[in-house]
Amino acid sequence: MKHRVVVVGAGFAGLQLVQGLKGAGCDITLIDQRNHHLFQPLLYQVATTLLATSEIAWPIRRVMRSREDVTTLLATVTGVDRVAREVVLDSGTRIPFDTLVVATGARHAYFGNDHWEADAPGLKTLEDATTIRRRLLLAFERAELTDDEAEREAQLTFAVVGAGATGVELAGIIAELAHRILPREFRHIDTHRARVLLIEAGPRILPAFREDLADYATRALERRGVEVLTGVPVTDCTAEGIMLGDKPIPSRTIIWAAGVQASPASQWLDAEADRAGRVKVTDTLALPDDPAIFVLGDTANVESGGRQVPGIAPAAKQQGKYAARLIRSRLDGKAARAPFHYRHMGDLATIGQNAAIIDFGRFQMKGLLAWWVWGIAHIYFLIGGRSRLMVSISWLWSYLSGQNSARLITQKETLRR
Image (cartoon, rainbow, N blue to C red; front, side, top):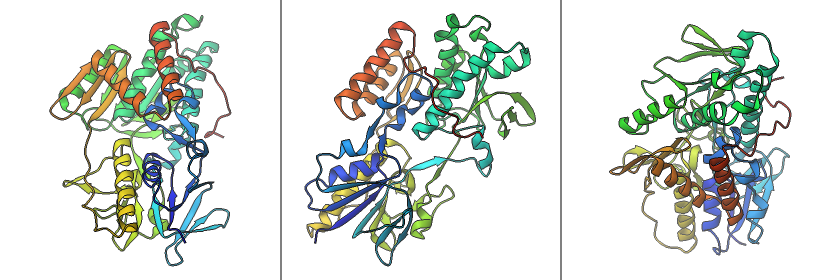
C-alpha cells in the first residue's frame, strides 16, 4: 500500500508541500473548504476594485489536474482522530492517513469582540473582498442620493482599523479611489471630501518595518489624503461608526486589519497552542508527541533563529517545501533532516500608485522604484501565465487611464442581516 498523505488546506504551504511530493510515490488527499487557491497578498486589490476575483484565484482541481497521485476533496474538516489515524469531515466521512499535514491558515481576530465582524469585516477570503468592495461602492452611491449632510459625511468616511501592511495598502488605494478615480463620475457629491482614516492602537504604522520607512509611508499616505491616527485604540464598532477611545466617529464603512486568529486546528489535534490559536510545533514543524503530523503556515507557531516565523506567504512556502523534503527523506529511509530554517526575503508594502517601501535588511527602497519592484515580485509569484498577463494588463490599464476595471456592485450582503 502506498504511503497515505492527507493535506488539509490548499493555501501557500499546502500547495507547496503537494508540489514537493511529486514523484514520491505517495497517495495524496488534498482537502479544502473552498474550491480555489487564493493569492492573498493581492486580495485587497479585489476589495478596492483594482482586480477581479478570477485574477488572483485558481480552481484547485485545475491546478492538480495533471497529478494522478492527488485526490482533491471539497469539504470542511471537523476533527482529527489521532488514534485511528483519520481526518473527520463534516459529512461524517473519515479519511485515513499515515502522514497528516494541517495548513488551514488564519482568520481575522477581534480580541474578544467577535460581534464587530458584521460591521467591520476583515480581509482573508474572496467573500470578504467582495463584501468590502460592495460596501465601498455603495457608500458613494448612498452619499450621492442623500440630502442629509451628516449622513453624507458618514457615508464618505472610511475607517481602516490596523496599520500593518494590509491596512496601509487598503487605506492608500481607497484614498486614490476617492480622490483620483471617482471625482468626475458623481454630480451631487465631491468625492475629494471623502475621509479615509487609518487607525493604529500602537505608536506608529508598519511596526514590522524600519522606523524611517514607516515615516515615509506615513507622509506618502497623508499626501494622498489619508488621516493617520496612532496611539488610540478602537473601543467599539457598529453600523453607525466607530468609537476611537471615547470619541464617536460616524462611518458606514469600516474595514478590520488589526489581528489574526488561527483556525481551530489545535482543537482537532488536542495540541498546545499560543494565544492566537497557533499550534506549537517542533523545529521539524511536527507535533512534539507525533512526528507524523505536521502543522504549517499561519496555523503554526514555529521559531527559527530564536525568532517566531512570521505568518506571510514566503514563510508558508518555505515550510511546505521543508516538510515535503522531510517526508521524502523518511520514505527513502534517510537520516533526519536538519531543523527548519526560515530565510526572510524581506518586507514589502505598497502605499498607492508610484509609492512603496521595501526592506531587505541591509538594503531598503522606497518610492517609485520600490513600487515597480513590488509589482514585479507579486506578478512573479502568481500561478500561470494567464494570471500574470491579466494582472499586468489590469495594472497597466489603471496606471494609464486612471480607472479601475473591477467596479461592479454584485452579490448580496454576506455579513449584515
